[in-house]
Length: 452
Image (cartoon, rainbow, N blue to C red; front, side):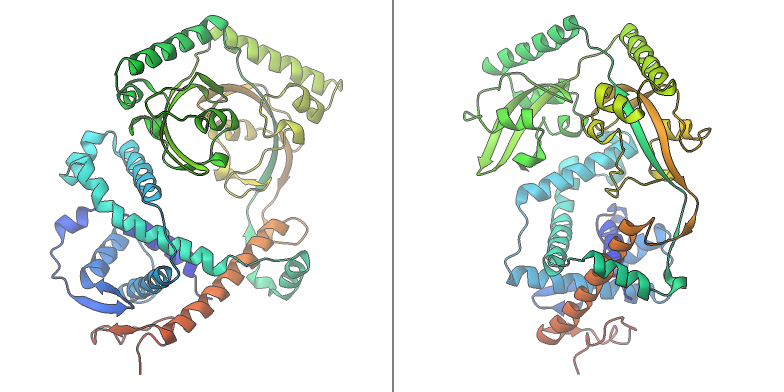
C-alpha cells in the first residue's frame, strides 16, 4: 500500500522548510517535467532533497526519485484543482503563513533573530512563503474533495478486522482514560474593574484617533494575534466562542470599537475589518484578569474538600464533576477527558499534559490524585485539578473490543488511499505529462508517468 497521505504530509513540511538552502545552493534551473500547465524545476527537487537529508529522512530507495514522484502527484492535484475551480482564499493563505511564521519566531526567540537568520525582513520572509503555502492548501483541499464521500459502517469495521492478517494488527501502547474536576481561582471584583477600565481607556483612545492595531501589539494578551495587530483572520461564526461571535457579527462601522465582551479567555474589545456573509475578519484586544495568591489557596482548599467528599463515599467522582467542575467540556460527562489529537477518550503517555503526567506516575487504576496546579495553555488560565485514572490498558495487539476507533481510522485511511490510488491512475491517462529523459528511469510507485 502506497503511503500517499503520510508522505504528502512530510512533503508539505519540506515545502515550508526554511529558505536557508536557497541561499546556500546554486542550482541551475531547468524544467524536468510538465503536468498539465504546471512545471517542475530541477532546483525544486534539489532543495527538497537537501532539506530531507537535514531532517534525517530514512527512505529505502532513491530519495530524489521519490521526491520527484511526489512533486508529480502534487502537480496532478493542482492541475485538477484548477479544472474543478477548487480555491483557497487569500486571507486563508495569509493566516496560515502568519501562524507558521509566529511558530518559528517562538522557536527561534524573536522576530529580529528570525530576520537575521534569513538575512531578510519579516515581510520578505512572508512573501517568500505565500505561494508555497497556497500550493499546499490547494493540494490538501483537492485530496479532501477526492475522498470526501468515504464512509464506513460498523459492519465494515468488523469485516475489516476479521480479514486483517493477525501479524498486520498494530501494537497499541499503554493507554490511559482520565477524568477531571477543574476549579478556577476566584477573580476579585476590583481586578475585573481594573481590566474593564483599561479596555474603556483603549476604546477612548481609538475614538480619539489612536490606531487599534498598535494598541493590540502593545497590550493584547492574545499572543497569537497580538503580533498581527490583533487580527484574527477570516473566521466563520462557528470558529469563535458564542459571546465573542455575537458581538463581532453585529458590528457595522469599521471605525467603531465594540463594547467589552467577557469570554472564557478573558475580556475583549473588537474592531471590524471586513465581513462577507457568515465569515468575518476582525481585530481584538484581550486582557486577562489576574488572580491573587489567596484566591489560588482558596481554590486548592476547595478542591481538597471535594476530594474528601469523593473518597469518603459522600458522592461519586462523576457527581462531583457535574456539581463542581468549571470545565464545561467535561463536567456533563462525569469529567471524562477527550484527547484533542484523536477525538477519543484514550491518551498515550506522550499526549498527556506534563502536569497530569507527573501525577499519573504513582497512580493505579481507580486512584484519584491530590489537587494540583495546572496552566490551561489553550485558554491561558490558571487552574487546579483532580484527576482520576479511570482505566489503564497494557500494551497489546489491536482488537475490536478495546480499539474500535483505531480500527475505524485504519479502515478509513485505507479506503482513502485506495480512492487516491485509483484517481491518480485515471488522471495519469488523461492529463498531459512529459518528463525529462534524465528522470524517466526512476522506479516510480505509480506506472504510466512516462507516456509510451
